[in-house]
Length: 395
Image 1: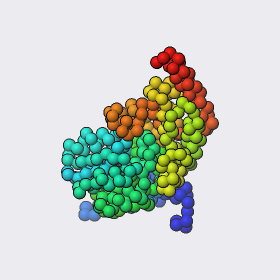
Image 2: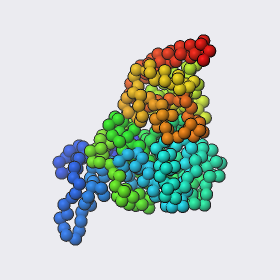
Image 3: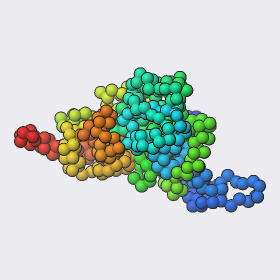
Image 4: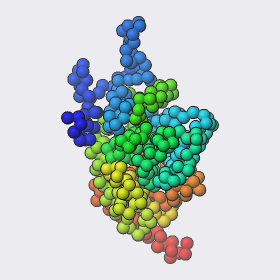
């Protein structure tokens, strides 16, 4: 049966664990920092919760099964997971990284890891020739976000993995936007999958967490050593909340993705919108590639207005979305990447990454798509009036 069940069934099967002692349908919250050892010479599985906790174990086992990996790891934040992954590298090692990488990852690479002699090169990972040219004799990792944040560029996972293996590199993939519901990079040969579980996996804007899944036992052992040594583990109560979030992930993200498709198609027709970034649209340059490695365009899109003034007007007049950092929640979240997720990049770096001054990112929640579209239509009317006024006044 296990080989034929659908992903939705597997998701519930992996997250609902009946407690053997009590029959409880939910994993207990083991609020214990330490564990009694019955024998002087033979210790049990658990001794100290930094090294392992039954509640965190249940979460880690679930995400490993859903991503198709050998072992999962839960961290205190997405950046804790990403930073720990990069610390698999040593002094003198080199990583190839997307030039439009998430701002937090950009910060750890440029301001922290460099001080320890870990080198990096930023490239357009959608351009395989550019990626290959950036590979050096000391390159150990090719790091990928697909779709990328916030411009939703699509990188060819199969081709990157093939390139990495040819040069004896590891492939790390940030799968936050797609989640294992829509995309499972390990199936394409990636070595490590990373998540900001704060986003879709939590889904309720109430947990900060990170997850990682290793594709091999060798890599899993190395990552566990670092997780235990550094101690940036996810707390027990947050682990339980993530397990609860996982149970509804499938229905939440599918509903949001369906609405995101409708919203993207709406924005595509609006004269005030210069460009829509969403891989579910037919005219997206990576649409065909994305469809071959993911099951949906996802629940996140970006759209570009004329300039910052237009973006500001739009944000000031929408009523339904929360204007905030983060994404992946039951409520729609509207963000301004130049000052939020990618504030670490200077203006020149943002331009190179395709992040214009009028770019807004939208994470579509569980509201009715028709209500969101009406709200956005009303806000665009204010943008239209503002731009007409600016032209009329000669600004």
